Amino acid sequence: MILEAKNITKSFFNHNGRLTVFTNLSLIIEKSDLITIMGPSGSGKSTLLNILGTLENFDEGTLNIDGKEIIKQNNDSLSKIRNQYLGFVFQFHHLIPEFNALENVLIPQQIYKNELNDSYAKELLQFMGLSKRMNHYPSELSGGERSRVAVARALVNKPSIVLADEPSGNLDVDNAKKLIKLFDKINKEFEQSIVIATHDKKVASIGSKNYILNKGVLSTSDII
Image (cartoon, rainbow, N blue to C red; front, side):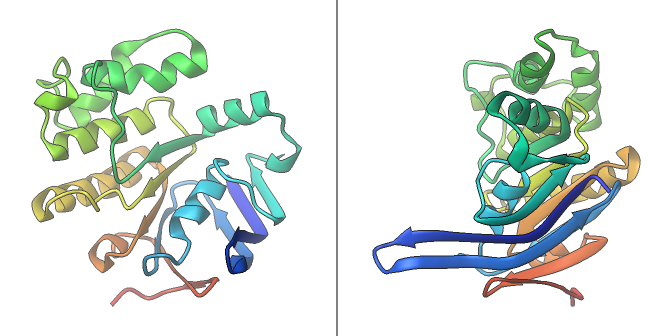
């Protein structure tokens, strides 16, 4: 077991008072899992991924990553856990425009180890079919290529888990299909644990474990 979220409760306050997103939500992530979480817009999928990724706090419950209880970590140790064990892929790639593809991929490595070894980054970009695009800047890449660079960046520190929030949501149909096939390939060839939040059944269908988050409840799902 790499990650265990147990009895997580999360709420927000707005002008109408307290809004509960989910209550007593539990999830376990094992090595090589490919988990998909479906749900309508506003169901809390992004909030859940942010909590699993230690980017957002929760009200009650426990979150353990590699046996470390997150609530007991200070900011420095939490940053190290995040950088060492977690990789993030968002709907918008968030590449730095002043850096080329290879330099963007190397950023997490530099943060984690404060040193650069570009051999693995180059290997990842070759795996993504971007061997001839490494020195190109984001403005010179297509939307699909930028997304693949973002995936390579998420993998460069060899994290235990990659969390992907609507990764295909900003792509056209063809590039979305390519990206989803890529996640499936990465899961199988690298034995990489991946959690994907999506509203798209086609994306969710690649999961080995499928869930639906709706009305505050996370339940298993059979994708039709």
